[in-house]
Length: 471
Image (cartoon, rainbow, N blue to C red; front, top):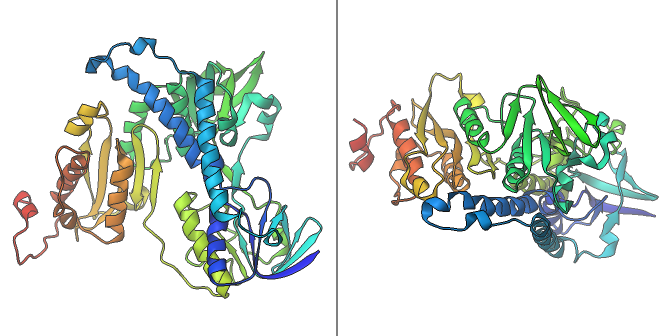
């Protein structure tokens, strides 16, 4: 069979579905091609089931402070892991059904194609025995977990993040190899479910943090819950029914390994070698992040597959940009949103705006800091651990970025992201109300610390309260 359309979209995940929304809005003809499962990575194997698992683990872990609150009987509490994992899958299925029900289930069969696409040329795709000719094409094929080839021989004793939520239960001991965002979230959750966890990270950073103070703070907190090894690559060998994991001079025997060392873009089977593509030093196609276009080709790339901002809301934005330009055959450049990333560990780890690695060498960069230890609301909650670090420009008072290790950091991070995108100064933020007692007071304290290091003085016609604190 052969069909011709205005736009062909490869991949029905978050980016592909958002591209589809723009193409449909423009009234263009299209085909949506998808290999494997339908439904987004977030709903099936990412954000949503992981948060369900994390919530169960956090609720169970909460028993450890019951005695200080005068609540008795915590020693009698038990977690049925099999039942809790069934709950996680139930939640996962709800979210997947919602995605399918609101996006692809209502599509007529002739615009949905099951299978894997390969380029014949810049306007032609082959999907199985079918040929699709399209004026423009959107690549939104997502990623898959990386597993070293040598470890595949260990069979189901090595699992990846996509398989975690299918586990009926967990063994007594596990190694989590890779402590980026996903590895750290799941490693802490597994430890809180009673698994003896050893976390191994080849770099000296956890959750990809460039801020050394925040990185050390996270390490100090997490090492109270499970062992963490840094700075050495993991090596795995068989030890009877178990696996021996080594990194540098450290060694541990475990029942199972969770590999979380990253995800590989699903580009290798697309036949991109048939296209005249510029590649970067990592062999990835060069694209314009504001138009999502690959060079001058009628092809756009969006979502995790481009290897840039592998976060759901960014994938959604990229899908919309790619879909709009593919629908209209344009190269309209869109302004991207302020970077925002959240690790749903306890405490949350958040990076907002400019990363510390971009600011550290700038002599105009100053830091406002507040440790969570004395913060009243955090103390009451039994979660007074962490640090808030806000970066500003001392010459103009602008807030540039932040790194948070904080309870309810997910909410503080949004406030800061919105403020940075609006170009707010530290003065602008401190003019706003802060209630008592709330976690936002910790942010207020960090901003006051930053205020004391700012050289810029705004000229006000009416005296502002924060001027009283800037003497």
